[in-house]
Image (cartoon, rainbow, N blue to C red; front, side, top):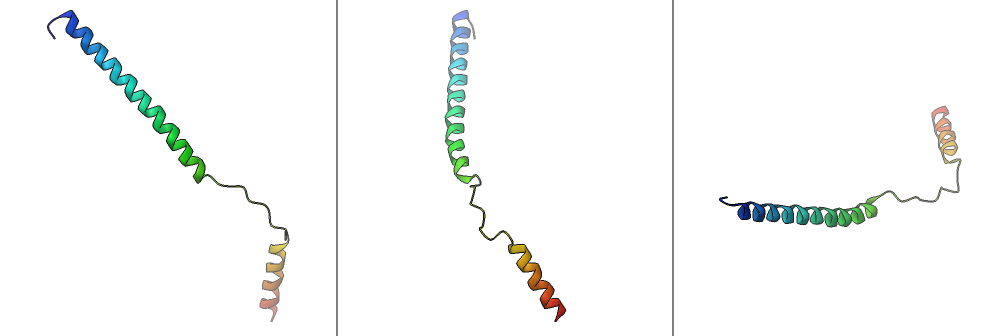
Amino acid sequence: MKSLADAEAAENQRDQKVKSDAAKRTSSSRASSVAKGTQQFRNFTERKNNNYMEKILKQYSQDSNE
């Protein structure tokens, strides 16, 4: 760089690159947040049979007694 105009042009070019990189980051983070949303855990309804474990334990105890 030999002159003030060259320095200003280089600074403007750097500022534009920083802005474009920031815009790319925000647009890619938006796209990735949508993708992450599809991978999140979905709430399922609870089973109607809440004493499932009790039945399993009874069956296990019956099998061990025989």
